[in-house]
Length: 163
Image (cartoon, rainbow, N blue to C red):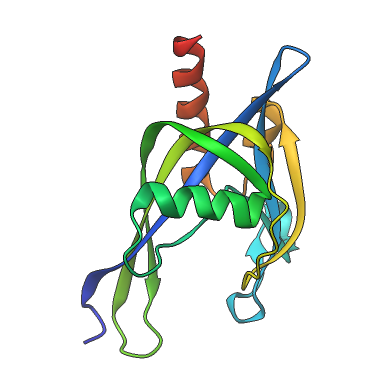
């Protein structure tokens, strides 16, 4: 049963931008890693107890991708946004601790325009340490996952063509 791979999870997220003094900046969140996942390996043998990522999360019962993406941006990013266009999806593979085998989690990301702050109270399993608005260069350098760096770069290119 160890080699069974199944598509078991769906999630959605947002690549949110806004303009400050004519410069486009991108929303990145800093999250404390869960203890059971351990630290991420960094350069030169260092380890990190936190990750920089795009806001994303699981779909709730009966929820559509766009609804989940907007909700996750509000919960994790503390912003309201509007969807501009679908950017793409990433597959994350991890081990199913209960049944063995591997699970493929498919996360769909949307380019979103910042509309304002979201002040509603949410509870999230992840501990969010910070929310940062960064230039494309700084955001790409800070993001912890290569797949998210590529999606952010694609979102930036699409936005540039739209303007």
